[in-house]
Image 1 (tube, one colour):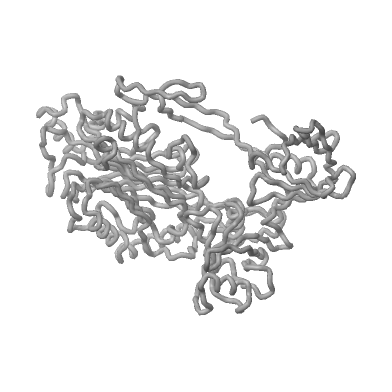
Image 2: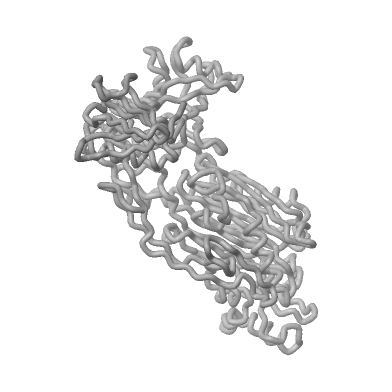
Length: 635
């Protein structure tokens, strides 16, 4: 039975004091009698101390402590390590024997039942084996393909060439997974006690894959730079039309990007559009263009990367695959990625939010997909169709707020669960927002013949069309921080994409509606992630003219952060040198509160932690200092 106690170190007396709250007495344990400290992986708040035999030591020779949080356990372990560096720290699922790192994990049999096994990494030989039996299957790390599970953060799928005897540990696992020795590759599902343990296993494997053994206690692997990915976001209100007979190349350059996020609005023939999309982006021509581009990039990388760089993917990189499709009535979002990226993407989630008639119908609303690349870089893609008409500024703002508050996508890198009370915009490194936002060009007399003719003339003049942006409703709303706070948009150097003539060039005069930039692509990044991405193109495709909207595209170059790599020596594995405690402290945080709505009659406020006011908060900057704590600090 657990007993509530307070524990603290008394450095001058060299003791650990346990204060019994209920019994109002203290027990002292000499720090010199503590020999081992075991950190539980499955129970992140649990810690076990093993003592030498002494009068002051527990009669059982051990003391099991359960803290209120993992952070408290880490701080306790860190303090113990600082006071007694000779205390042997170890994990109950992660240990080191000579040059071999042992990981305790579980495997699933054909019935879905889990049984315990051990995975051994021989860092000197660069091999991986299942079990510690003499006849266990042993494979080279470079031959192993590891895929993290999309939904379970503690699970890894390992694929490797089939080998080994019929009675070996590896053979038993193969039989349980329904595999035969004639198969070229075998896939085994490994389940670790915690996501942290899984990442330590993957980090050591990645280091070996880069040729870093870590057997030298003074060696450190230089931090590799991540891969630069090209991302294309594209949007088109197709006006209920079928796919065009002509190529989509002007709108979606095939093979030139690594990730394609394509949004449609007013699209009722979903099957035909997505078949045409796949034929264009996943066809033979796209594969040939991709191959040529990767060969050129490989030459450049060979001249710039360090000695530990290794971009030889274990998955084929010569194709594209459809990752996800999500829909809300006529609003659709498709994500197509390079084939090898599919195995690097985890926490794939999606959501929809209807903002149409009565705020429940899906003729207007948003569709979103969230994902994480390499377990480090989180992306969210949102396509939407907001309320029409020039006078509905407030309605469009409400549509935006409903989408932000109503979408529940949880693909952030720090875990599969949403952060309670925080919208998804603050949970992803990068958010791409594109679609038919329906904001108009308004010079003050929208709907009059005089203003319509003036806007048409300016839209068709390449030297004058830039002035239209001064009258763009969305630009004004963003500048006033009434909507889409902290979103960015590239320079617009193309003509307005609405309201167009169908099937030919020119603008349609429907009730003197001004030509407008209804179709947009915007993005926002968290402060620390902003330098990792920049826009490379923002344009339209006027040649595709079957709808009264013209398609819009924007491309970005994004540096995907490297996944965790065990860059230190293997002597640190198993926490033998004590737990590292990283303190992050906010040194300068500034924020402003903006009016929640541009409509002065719509007064809505929020009460939170002593604050009473508008509910739209915009964070302008967030700066961190990090250091290893030499002693307990005030937080």
